Amino acid sequence: SLGYVILAGISRFMPGWQAISWAIAVGLPVSLVGSAIFWRPQYLQASGQQILAFSYLGIFSAYVGFFAWNTGLKLGGMARVGQVQLLQPFITFAFAMLLLGESVDIRTLVFALLVFMVVLMGQRARVDKVFATPSDTNRC
Image (tube, rainbow, N blue to C red; front, side):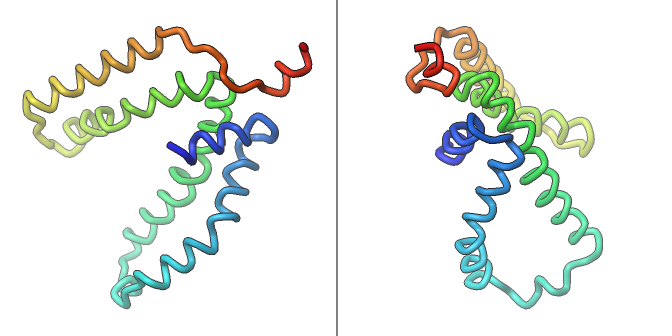
């Protein structure tokens, strides 16, 4: 969540694609050290399908997806748009049921409904601006 807050703040001053690109560039040294520490030789034996899946997740889910996400956080506000992500696990459950035939018990469905209701209430709640945006300071 800290990363979202920082990226949303940065996205006020630059496009979302630049914000995530800079975040990746700044985080690269830490990622390289972590990769070196946790590297296993069997990673070289990955199948083409595994490499393709890993590449898709890295390029689209963890990079390109943030272009729109950062812009959405900037336009809709961190508090409201950020709550939408609380629904992501439940959308994943639904697709796992539909596409993979996974079973979901009643406890999971009740929990999903409760989280959905909390997110809905949060979306309708009044949110006061705490931080001034560049456009707010121009009005003063």
